[in-house]
Image (cartoon, rainbow, N blue to C red):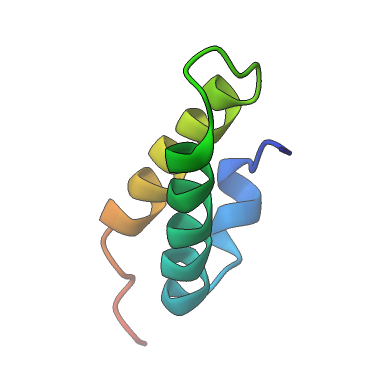
Length: 60
């Protein structure tokens, strides 16, 4: 699984972020505890949560 950076995630729409979160969460659920990709997936989920928690900029 690839690591999604915060910069990459900031360029996605909220709908895309929620879909990506769902896909990664489902992948984590299917992974065994010792899977070497599990920490990467969990870090991606945290990064997505961070981006979703950001306030939206006000329109100008």
